[in-house]
Image 1 (cartoon, rainbow, N blue to C red):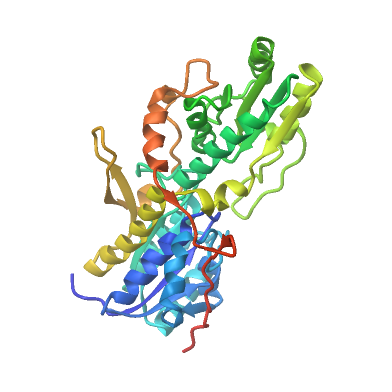
Image 2: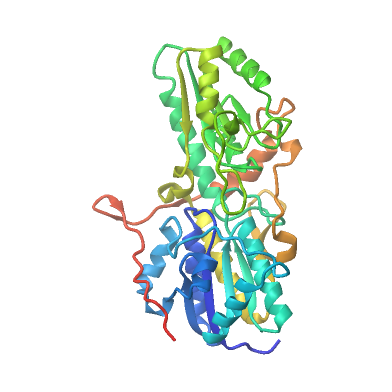
Length: 413
């Protein structure tokens, strides 16, 4: 395919992670090296920033600050949850995108995010093809939920998993300080896929983890939960339960809905939270006096201080390779990871069609969950343990993290 000369724009979308900026660094730094890419823009708040024509000239940034993106959590350019309607339903946003792309001669579009972000990426790519505007579109995977189709794992997941396993081990020791009975319920993120909650099993693998783990892949039974918890409590007097915020019963009712009417985000997803509190109150009424509900909440996706070096390096590589593939002529793909078989962990880069990835969720295989549905098998440990290896920590100033400070110089035309 012939060389395509023009500007590139990069956007971040969906929930932040501790390594999403590592992917940003990969895209931006690689794009700045490419002779055929004349300008590199960073969109403010993802696709919304492009529609509003608010984006930054990344060539104006200090290279040292771009390096610091690798260990800076959250979305440095700002994220968004904005759902593009189908072009068949409403072309307004798409026509605006073409208008902006033409104005700034944007020929490369890189979008970093999870399921909904890949849906956006796919819609933009297909529309550009439909109207005959040549623009190479590449998706860069990111989600702590680890639920993107076709890839062994997603950047962001391993670091969140490492934080969850580490924090669970710390809570385990704290919960055993006193010689009185204690039940602790840990609420971990995850709507329909239990990858994050399952990572608490890594703590159990080290002997300092939960006794019971409940995932959204298995319909939640309040009766069985109470029976399981009571059994462990009678045997040991100490119980730690890890539960996904997305656990729901056989009728599809979230545990979180048992306490309140849940608000919805712009994609129509219920805004979950409060599962640990609800279960802790029920356990306190039915089983024990001393019960603690702990919601890890945003901490699990922002913990750059305990990030996996493997995760950071792979997140950077995903962004870097998206640019290299696009310059080579690839378009309409998402960068993905494929694990090699064997005792030593190694993952290779592959490409997936955006159409196949968009809005398809990957859940934990049933055979990785124990027969009782309240724990994980060794297959999960073998899968997850290699992903959390290596230590990555931001450089420190005065004992505190030194994160990237971008100038965010607005692009003009």
